[in-house]
Each structure stands twice: as C-alpha cells, then as structure tokens.
Amino acid sequence: MQSSVRASDWPFACAPALFALAFIAPGLTPAAHAQFSNPTSQRTEVRNAAPLHPPAGASVAIVEFEDLECPDCANANPVIKEAVDKYHIPWVRHDFPLPFHTWSFEAAVDARWFDTKSQRLGDDFRDATFAAQPTIHSQDDLHAFAVKFAQDHHLAFPFAVDPQGRLARLVKADYDLGQSVGIQHTPTLWVVTNKTSGAPFVEVVDRGRLFTLIQEAQAESAGK
Image 1 (cartoon, rainbow, N blue to C red):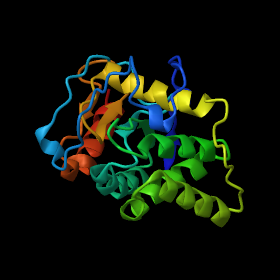
Image 2 (cartoon, rainbow, N blue to C red):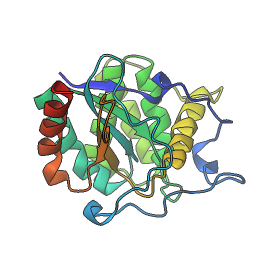
Image 3 (cartoon, rainbow, N blue to C red):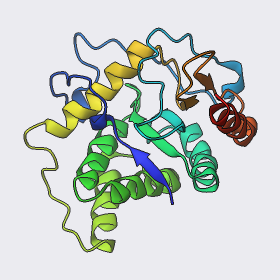
Image 4 (cartoon, one colour):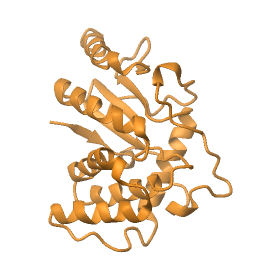
C-alpha cells in the first residue's frame, strides 16, 4: 500500500496566498530555472536539512519535491510508486511548481482540493495528472481533466476551487520550503532515514539506483 505524507503535516508556516496566474510575483524568487531530463548531472547543495527525515514512526522514507507539469517528474512517478509499494515506506510529496510552467501551480492547488476528500484521492490525482500530462496544454485543459477525474470518483469539482486561498498558501509554503532546502530542479528526491549518526539522507541522482539506496537505508536503519 502506497503511503504518502503532505506538506501540511510539516511544521512550517504558510506564506501569503498566490494564484496560478500570479505565481511569478514581486517578492517571489524562482529557485529553479528548469527541470533536467538527466537528473544524474545535478546534485542539490542542501542548505536546510530539517525536512529530510521520515515521518514519525517510520525509519526510512522518500522525500520528493515535484512539479505536476514537469516531464521528468512524470517519468519518475511510476518508478517511485513501484519503490514505495515494494518496500512499504512513506512517500513525502512536496509541491514545487516551477514559475515558467503555465498550469503547474493550479494543478497543485487542485490536488490539494482532492486531498481534502482523502489523502489517497489527492495522490491518485497527482499520479493521473502525470500520466495525462501530454494531453494537458493549458489551464482550461487542466480544469476539464480535474472535472472528469472528480466525476469518475463521484465528486462535483467546484468552479472556484480555492476561494479563500488556503490551498494556494499550502502550495506556496511547500515552494518556500524547497527554496530553503536549495532545490534547483524537479524532481528532486532523497531516501531519508531516522539515523542519529552519519548521513541521515542521500539524494537520488540516479533513479536506476533507487531500489538499492532504499535497501541500503533499511539495512543501516535496522542496525543503527
């Protein structure tokens, strides 16, 4: 069973609300300029390691910063899903919508709306959005996709998804958190542990080694 934790479970304050079309706003400095199709060439210089640990009760987890419009995030998504299902570890998914993407911020807000129905439904929407990415070219396409996804799950998707800006603040808080960590591209992911000595996290710069890194982390955590 896939296990996922949202940013609202982390003790970080939310910033002022932003809307999808106003994501590139005064005072908001884009930390990432592009996603990279070859993540093996990029390693993050971590400035704030506080988020890089498993949720309470877990010894190993995956922490990811993702953008729902990022093609490489879509490529990584099924690999990560397979890993968390195989090893039964939590998957901490953070929003990091890149400023130059036209609908990624709105998609993250939509996912947060589905989170309010159930965490599983919100994650299913994220996964479905990645799978449908080639067919979504605009915010109108995204809205039609979200309406259809809601209908398929016997829900009525509202015209105004986030009238008070609460969900947008959660997305923005994740983005700010990513900036504090030092995110430079999406996806950025780590295998994290509850180890109290040595390196408690390792960045996955080669997704071909994801399963091996998880196995090593589980073995090290068991023997700590």
